[in-house]
Structure formats: structure tokens, C-alpha cells
Amino acid sequence: MNWHQKCKAVLEVICFVLSHLLCVIVTGHRIEQIPEVPLVLEDKVQEVKKTKEAVSVLRKLNVWPDIEKVMRALWLPLILTTRSYKCLHH
Image (cartoon, rainbow, N blue to C red):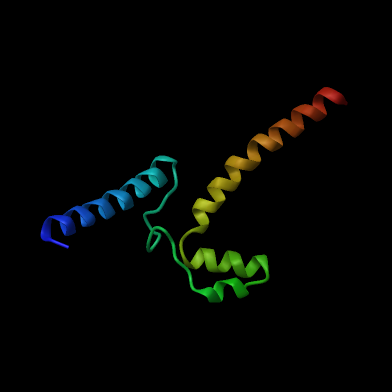
């Protein structure tokens, strides 16, 4: 592999990583305090059985605030729809 091919390969990798980071940021995720993106965890994390333990791991990784944001975004429309359905049919 000559010098030009190496430079091209490095630039392609940089563009790939930046494009994925940009997609994550544009969709509104907060990644400032996350150590690395994509977040790579040890296999030991698969041993977690309880939700409380999983939340603890996610808090240590500074990922929990973003998960709470996503949960609010998913649950709020569901709650509003359920309430309006109950109001209409009762």
C-alpha cells in the first residue's frame, strides 16, 4: 500500500466516524460526557440481571440522562393518547 492509498484510507475512516457522530448529535442525543462513541462495554455487563444494576452501570457511564430523555419522548405521547382516549370514552 503506497502513501496515497494510506492517506485515502485514513480519511475514509475519519469521515465514517464523523458522519456517525454527526448523526448521533443531530438526532438530539447528548454525548458530551460519554467516554467514547460508539460506547463499547465489557462482556461482563451481560451478567447484569436486575434493572437496578443496569441503571447503576448506565449512570456510571454518564448515559442515563440521555436514556431518560428518550423515555420521556416515548412515554409522553402514549400518556397523552391514553388520557384523551379515556376522556372520550367515559
